[in-house]
Length: 155
Image (cartoon, rainbow, N blue to C red; front, side, top):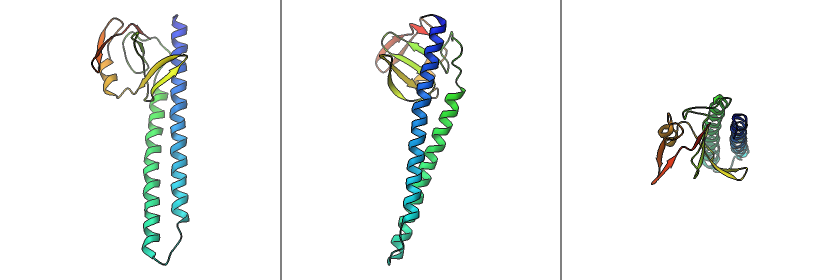
């Protein structure tokens, strides 16, 4: 893979990751809106406490979804800040690592995704695995679970 192909690959992975996280944000927004609508539509009943309890539960759900939205927005900002415009010589945020057994992209969490018939594990720079990998170079080894891996390619 040439350097320009490596950079294009990392850009593609980052774009996919942003798309996946943006989808999570839209889901959180929809859930918060539904919770708000449910709280607003709770009708006053003859049992006044039931009405107040229903509205309170709706507001709690709305607050929970609002916190999720804030978390996802923060994640989007962190992913956008990851630099994928240069080839790295050591593992840092924005690194793509190929071990021959597993491919890892360190920019944000999205679990394992199939990209051009390759399984890529998307992990957050704050994850324990990423912290274990930081500073390693091509030719270095690391342990994930019970298995040992060799950094065969890094970009």
